[in-house]
Amino acid sequence: MTVYIEYVILDNFFIDFMLFKTAFKVTGKSMSRRRTVVCAAAGAIFALVYPLVTDNAVVISVVKVLFGLFLTFIAAKFSSVKDYAAFTAVFFGLTFFIGGAISGFYSLLGISAYSEFSVALTVLPVYLAMKAAIRLVRFFYRKKDISGLVVKAEIFCGERSVVLRGFFDTGNSLYDDLTPVIIVTKSAILPVLDVDLLKGAKQVTVETAVGKERKFSFKPDMLVIYSGGNKNIFNNVRVCVVNKVFSDYDAILHPAFMENGYERKIVV
Image (cartoon, rainbow, N blue to C red; front, side, top):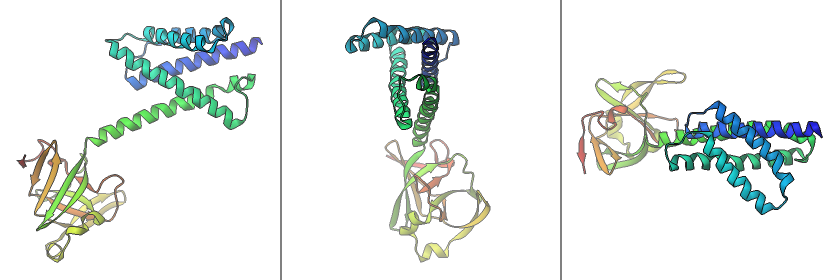
């Protein structure tokens, strides 16, 4: 029994420490190792003691929540109530996530969560779940950042036009003489291609993962980028056509067409 109690204390200390550490990473707050160790130790002692006080599920739940609010309050220095609420929400969210991960892990292995063996094994699902939580948050932040670079664009060739989902790639430095070049998938640009465009076509050199390649390109009458309720019209642009289909968009736009990056006519 002594070994089991030691496992309970060590596991709960580890779990609480990882919960606080992950909450700090997710919220971007500076972590005080001393405060975190104190909170994790208090949480471990609480987890050992509260089952001996009462077995009333409602009372236990209320006490757990109140104690959790106290721990998050002393875990860091907060600039406002909103700052504290955000950190606490992340901490409680991670707590529920971890509980589900541990239960699922034990269920997958077909072992009891209350055996001495399972208590000793708790660190594994907790560690994996924390890593997954951090990766998930980073993924969504990355998607959020990228979403600001994705815009609606329209290419006009004579009386025809095609609407594209374009992505501003700041690494795209492709020019044809002094003309910025955008890269568009063949399947997306087909509706505006005709014999006249093919007659005036030329090849441009594009760098790919396998090296430099020569690709077909043409000069449209106009490129329109819709941003912030405005139509940003560009006449000096060349379209390079590639076969590869991009994952979430139809075209890679030149950074020269970003706001304040190129001379343009704006029609409201």
